[in-house]
Image (cartoon, rainbow, N blue to C red; front, side, top):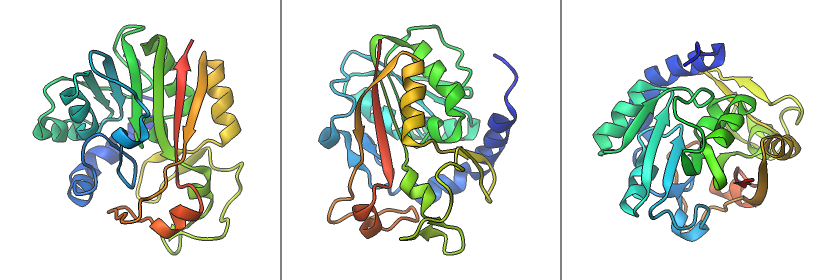
Length: 244
């Protein structure tokens, strides 16, 4: 493996320090094979399709609850996280498959190892997409599937730092969000729609769907998000792409 980039090193330190508190705050929300802030089941969204018998890699797996649920459906899972403390939580949750401690932009696994690579607010938010996307493409077999959930441009553009919540007004330039240093520590990445399309195509990945999940009527979450806001503007984007 190569030396960690400065951003990957900063995010490793941040997540090693915040992991216990994060899991304490959000374990109630994070519950298996479900996507995003509102935990909409994969069984409803059908993003990944039938995973039985497939080799599946989760980039930025955290406590690996999603992968644990997929393994119960017959997937051969591997979880990767930049934070060793997050992987300790995965082991405590019962992950009995391979867990890899590495940044998603430098994965110590062979080319074309997986049928599916996915991430739910993981490596594509906390890793530089221009470094992570080529790695994901390298790891996929021809015809494989890449799926990742990230905050939508609306979410980052409308985030009110003072209120610490999304607003109904734009707060920053659309063209000034690619890399943001968070006040709590760490670095996040937020690409626009066109940038994502061009980046995926440049790595032999063709967009096959873009899912913008709506909170259900009874939605609750432990994250600082308002379901009424998220029913007016998409707060999340699940990009789905096929490997040529």
